[in-house]
Image (cartoon, rainbow, N blue to C red; front, top):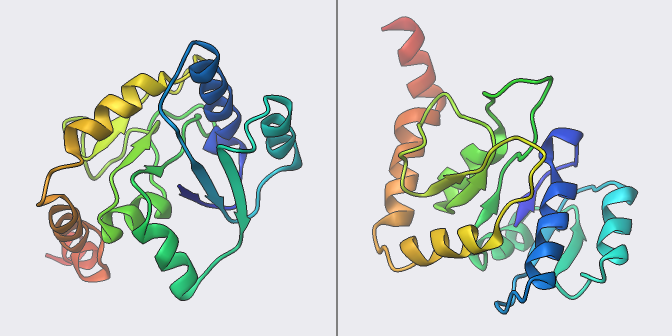
Length: 172
């Protein structure tokens, strides 16, 4: 799932091209992508072009319990997958929310608060190449039975992303 108001740096066309390639090359696993928020017409048309409407759903803006239910039923979050102003590093509110919800995710940007060894985030290159959905599946399979994952991610968020933790970095 992804919660956003789509911008170019989200890289959703890259994700959709990648999903199309996965099924074109005999991908067998049923993958559902739920996009929550406002999305570009061009992205929606790409889903139609590739006949992926049974895999990609645009749910519009959601909040409160309705959004919480979508989070509770998601297996992975989707972060930004394309560069922003050519930068390799970035930081988005979306990934902090994924941490707070205990939702592992895929991402393209290198984040300042964690490195590529963090076990519940799979980072893909920001280049133009498609993402290999088999790698996403392998990543998910490697973490899905981890009973400490949600709690570990929430504790990481508390330690690194609360206002208190941010002010302590500045004033202590």
